[in-house]
Length: 394
Image 1 (cartoon, rainbow, N blue to C red):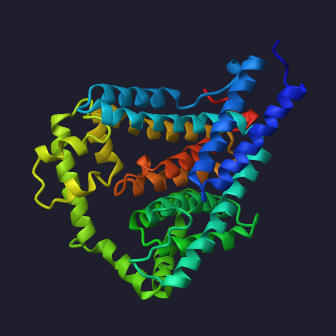
Image 2 (image 1 turned 120 degrees about the horizontal axis):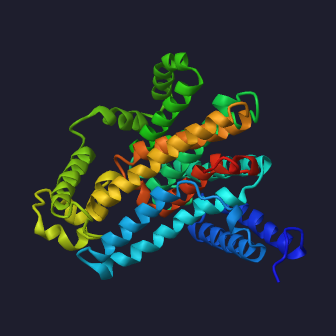
C-alpha cells in the first residue's frame, strides 16, 4: 500500500535523492558517467517516491509547454529527416530535460539550494587545479589549452562559464557573505583564460554585464578598467587571443562564417522541420563547400544555425521560446520574492548563466554538449525550487 512521507521507506528515498543531487553537482566537473549515474539514480528515486506517495499532483513543471514543444519538434525532425537511422539516436539527449524538473521538485528547501550552489562552486574551483597543473607543465599556449578533467577544452570552458556566473551572482548581490567565493572566482577566471575559449569569454562578459546592470548600472563604467587590467596582467599568448576577438580576418571566424553560409543553404531546403540530427553527414556533398570546412567539421559552430538545420523553424522557434518563457517566468517570480536576498542572488546568478550560455551559443554548439547542457538545466532550476516558490510556479 502507499506509504506517507514519514515512513522509513520515504525517508530512505529522500536520502537517496539528496545524495544524488550532491553527487551530481560534485561530478559535473570531473566525470560525465558519474554525473549521469547520479541524476539517473536520483530521478528514479524521485519517480518512485511520487508513485508510492501518490504525490504527482504536488509536483511542479515550469516551462513545460515550450520544453514539450521543443521535444515534439525534435521528434518530428527525426521522423521526417533525411536519415532516420543516423538521427534517432540523438533523441536520447532529450532525457537531459528531466534534470530540470528533477531539481525543481527535489530541492525542497532554501538551505539545500544554497548548499548545492556553494558545492557547485567548490567543485568548479577544485577542477581548476588540473588546469593550473597543465599550464605549469606545458606552458600557457594556444596549442595546449586547459581542459580540466574534460576531454575537450570547449566543454571545460562552458562548465567554468556557468559556475563562474552563478558565483558572480552571489558576490554581486551579497558581497559580504561567503567571502571565500572571491578566491574561487579568481581561480575560475584565470583558468577560463587558460582555455583560450573566446565564446566562453564573451558569455562571461555578457553575463557579468547582465548582473551589474540589475545591481547598479553606474558600476558598468568600471568594466572597461577591469578589462584593461585583466588584459595588462595576462600572458602574451592570452593577450594575442583577446586581440583576435576584434580581428575580422581571423581564420577561425572565417571558418565559422563558411559553416554558417553552408548551414543557411541546407536550411533553405529543409526550412520547416529540418533534415534531422547529424544530417550534415549525409547532405554535405550536395552543397558547395569551397573551403572544405563543412565536410571536415560537419557542425555549424552555432546553436541557432545548428538547430535551424537539424530541426527547422519549428525546432528553432520552440527552442527560443524556452528562453523567452524562462526569463518572463523568472521576472514574475523575482517580483514575488523581492524581499528575499538569498533567493535574489541565486535567481540572478542562474539568469546570468543562461545569458552567458546563449551568447556563447552564437559561436559554438554548446547546447549539443551533454556536460554543459546537463549543468545548465540544473542551474536553470535553482530559481524555481523550494516549497514556498512552488505555490506560485504556475
